[in-house]
Image (tube, rainbow, N blue to C red; front, top):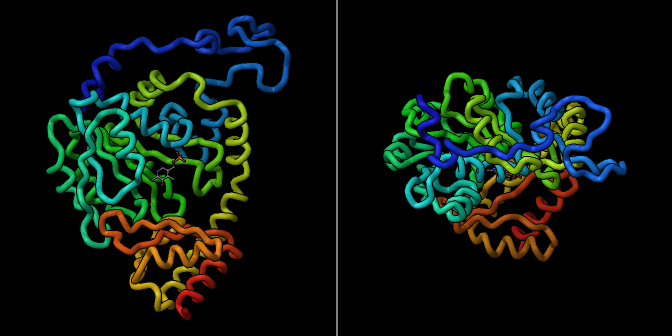
Length: 345
Ligand SMILES: *Cc1c(COP(=O)(O)O)cnc(C)c1O
């Protein structure tokens, strides 16, 4: 499969920005090459444009070489880079499923690249052939979100494989919630598919949504292109340091993950037992989607008790559905009590 031929013409032929650190990336005693201010305050120097120390640690955790990793200012930046690398505005298109993550349509509009939405089946099941049928010779990227937001479920691997095997375009698998799922990441198949990009983030299981650090894993060829078009210093010094610190505290990550998973079981049980809940959808994420009689009414009831959940009723297959993120044990208790009070009312 020829990845180069999938790139936009202008990207294929561009000259990337060459930073001072690109031109000299070694140890010296005096740095007078980047027009920085010489007075030390911890941030007077430009950050490492390739975040080498963070990638070395990520590489250990994920089992993927650093050359196959790109770090972005949140995975939202990574997704935007993918649009800009492959999709010619007004000419190319991308395919995703419906419902899915709300950033794909937004990025499609910003980049002027039409998004073709393929409805999921009952219970949010993916039909790979329908994604393929929606594509044509102008399709450059398929966006697949697994575990899916807002439904919470993993999408079937064999259905996704059909799209990868078609080799018609890049297949992005957004794994923002993969740490909550009891299954292998698509990273294990990275070497098998030259057209696969796996996106992950530190925003969810790693507890760093405020830091804005997301990443993708792909062939060295794809990573090289994304590196060439990203803003050179997209991850600032503080973010690189905080990301590294967090990645070095893996025990804390695992401990919090364990609590969230146990709390999810507790919430699922409470929701299953509640007469208010008409249907609870199975979740491989840190949230659950549930159908109720009147989503807006329950939303407002909880709001009065200062508990905010997400009303997803307007999404396809989600009529009268609320999405509950798993919080701390105390927060979850507030949710469960709120629903119980609504039931009694
Ligand atoms: C939360 C989320 C992200 C994370 O985006 P960041 O920009 O890394 O915070 C990505 N994809 C999906 C589907 C999400 O729900």
